Image (cartoon, rainbow, N blue to C red):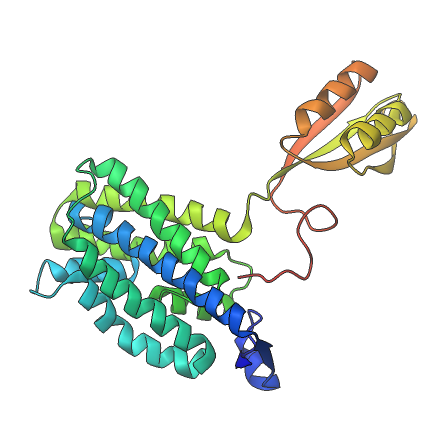
Length: 307
């Protein structure tokens, strides 16, 4: 059996408890296969789309691209060199178990970036390159995060910030840091268009990263005020398999007591619920709002890891 420090999103707890969890050799191999594929995807996004189109979309990769235009050192090599001090910090902050996989991912990204650079740009359309490059980077980062590692650089800084700011989503933290690098790239390259396209790449990366890490959690939250609550509730339960809750209400003007139906459902189910309400009581009053996250049966677990 192989061992690695237990990581549950709270490194301080890991340090205090010194917990160790066992992982099988098969799981260990699977983890590194996933990291290898994701690292290649990340390198492809950089070397085939971002770098050849003169965009620096943030993070140490963006810094490496900027420096590559100033000194005769390849982007992939600069990515590795810039990561060395941060990896040293990671050993101290997160422990050797997490850092080994991160070092592996960082070295692989560096090597693959240098290797794929020789292929040139996959497209000369800067907008398409920004979108494709941002999405590829986000998918790779999200997959590597889920595998229990990082791609080095800003990823490690973000993991450290998550300990202090757990209420912020990972994509938002990347967005704040990357915005600084994008601004710097516009100053260094003296090219507003390049900076704006880099910002597009950052936006695509941020949105995609949250989807990869958290999924599409958005759902509809309904409040239905009707004279036929039983009929509507019965059909929602039977036809949609969606749980409902009665909330006791009273009209401020009429003083009439009513049962308000409250239910949450995924967006794909909402049109059918709307149809049921219209068929049962066209005169009903329905309030529809968005729920960004839902925990409980049928949705996310309370105990799932918050990356």
